[in-house]
Length: 289
Image 1 (cartoon, one colour):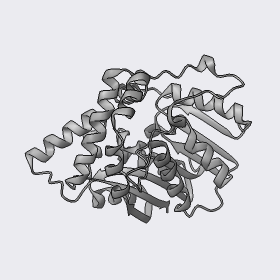
Image 2 (cartoon, one colour):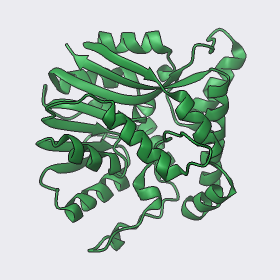
Image 3 (spheres, rainbow, N blue to C red):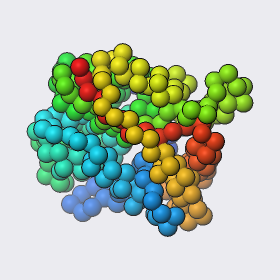
């Protein structure tokens, strides 16, 4: 079992505090969880979009723009409750898919869901740290992840770990959050805002890098960049708008008042940071040399 350390415990707590997922209720009927288990920021096209529609649209965007061919064995990092994992399995048809997540309730639920769907022999979920992948060298053809790498301690270490377990020519596909070009590291105000945002969203300060540094970290880990698409305009404004009174009430009922307020604060802050040009949302594909 991979040892989970302090930072990872904080990330797990952030995503599970107040969660009312009762695995004891999981039987032959569908276990209901909010928004079908999706946890991403979503891809927003209209002001009338609802959160679940946006998260499904982001997943569709990732799949349709992935250019993935001949997926043999997929690793889905920060898999959450597994909705993206099952979509990857259905679309890419790998021989095996493994999801890894820092929150045990997520992987426990996803394993039960895999059994319910009749795919447990090929789709498995493990509780662990994606920075310290406990898999043999060159054992995956593809690694996919939506937003999780921003939380990894650190993302740079994850790139190296991913490079080790990917086959030569294997592909890494991620959506991620990086610093925008208007962020100035020398500016004390910008630094303060970054620290507040990083602490609230449980992100290591070391992960606060701009596009050039992000690409260099990938290259230093043995990758070549296939593409880097900036889609923050389709992510942060819509996600920030989604925290209306109805959503806040729903979150409060599910997670408790304090956790709901925390998510609302982070959502609004991310929208403001993007508007100021301090952050960007990217979809990245890199290939192992």
